[in-house]
Image (cartoon, rainbow, N blue to C red; front, side, top):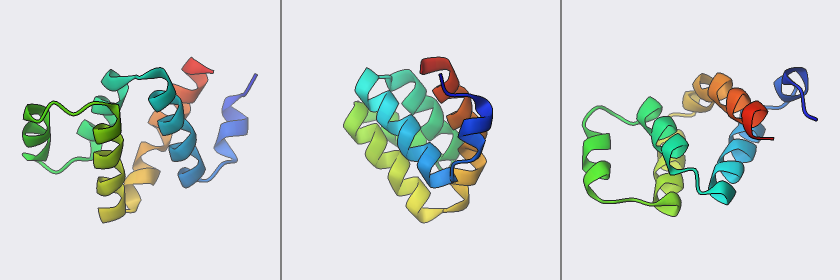
Length: 88
């Protein structure tokens, strides 16, 4: 069983990859929307919502936001850790 201390030793990039991969595997659209809503620019989420994105599109949008703002991964660390602890 993985612990919070174990996860805290990982880089933000590693946490991102693990959490996103787990959400993709489980088809966790709600969590992916939550993550996207945490980092998307104001107004951007409304446009995406109307497009009917599913898992692959949400992951692509999340990754695009993170490429545009590398500090987003660090901001999302607590959410990644919580998600991984809850779902592993």
